Image (cartoon, rainbow, N blue to C red; front, side):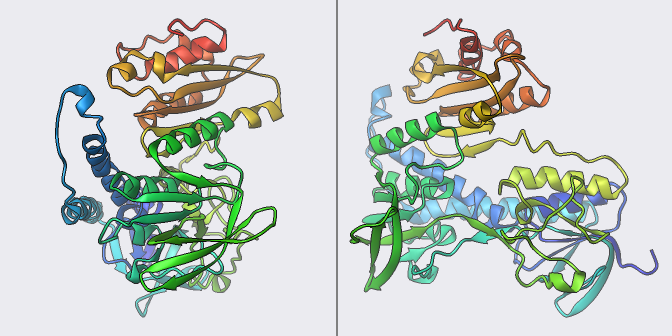
Length: 465
């Protein structure tokens, strides 16, 4: 240990990095974490998952009050939007959680190296002008917004923004155009739609939410349209010009054809994210990235260079905070000589719109490519709790292997789908069959009874439909 400053040095303090650092320290390893932000937590806690959920939650209340949902339950209100206060509660949530991570670092004796790290060798990095050597280095630098050629983001002007800028808008735009029909665009588009903006979503593909089950994508499109979001599918944005306080977009059919223009007060560029590997000087450590800019790892998260590991958004797989967290724990345990494993076949994904959208495992299309399947669906309109809460939209869908009945995938749209999907993920982790779920007693009345009914529907015996 005399030759090294640390047993483990983590680059990046996002969900993967800070969790890896804490777990490594818990395992008795001298640990440091390098990050140049003013607060810990990475994109997720500072400008991503957490602040967006704060705005989603607050805007749901406003929308329910402004658009009659409360009136249905005998509550007459006339809401007035206080946007500065809404932003303030978002900032307060971020401050509380990021400060909590700093407390956990101190509690677990993790050194926070304040600055951005770059490799100087296979076992050394430079942070804020000082070089540190570590026996193990974990790359956990996360991802950033993918730029769109011809559309220049300038968050300060609040006309063409990315997801960070969309959280900071000083006023509700008259018309917001969201470029990209994925998770982030739909969540932030929903926030501003609820607060009064006209929202148009432009998507290059023929449907929103790429990668999700086809039934989910179709029903989600219908629900969002009913809520007032307009869609221009199979359309690409080829350019944007800022004129005064507005932007003019140039659109073309994805398959080619005549161009058109679309004016907006705010344009949100949300076409995906890319790994953060620039500036790390990976070449000095003997590392390179693949064609997608990712760092390839073995199943234990080790790279081709002994002693260097990588987790989260910089390696292949879904760019999700909880995936990074699990990989951070597993990586630290592997470094400590334990057996850290992540089952990448069972990683849930959630869209925190209203209603929420969630899935885990294979889509029906993917499952059918592997063999014969059985499918069970149950509508939330048949669920007693959803009916009582005036939440008729959505369904639960379970895909099972036709021969073994083993659950291959679960997809749902419901007000609490993000919570419901945890049951499905846990069942799949234990290798459950649809019959296992169907014969598990579920409390009544709960939204989760729809999961039981969908499991019963796999074998053609749902009760409440």
